[in-house]
Amino acid sequence: MEVTGWCWVNVYTPETFATAANGLRQRDTEITAALTTAAKRSPLDVLLGAEDIEQMWRNDLTLGQRRAILAAVLTVTVLPGGKGGRAPDGSYFNTDTIDLQLTEQAHARLGAPTRR
Image (cartoon, rainbow, N blue to C red; front, side, top):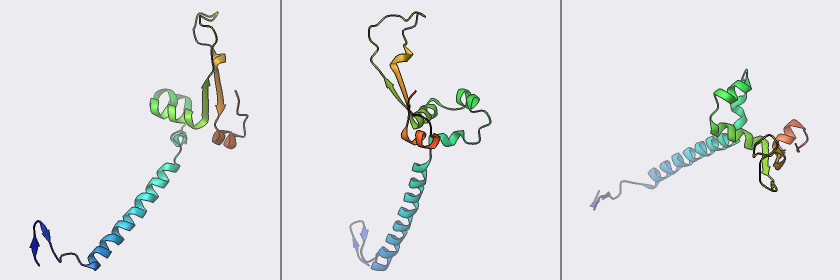
């Protein structure tokens, strides 16, 4: 073997490259399968088997988990509110300016109407 700079020449043969390439292809297949499986998980999976979903929602789920669950089942649209000012109850929030619709996926699974 000759030494050229920092590389050993003639250390790698076509067989060693083929073996390494096969190993890399196998690892690529494994990683792709794992990512595909992970991508299929639903944010709702965390609720499966929960005895008390309301309690879990309030106490156990992170803000990120709650947002992901809502995004999976609802499309929220904030409509124009008209003139500003307080509502008769003293609040500034007008529920009539919020449009909630089930996502297509949620609608298909529940068979429910899509509009609030």
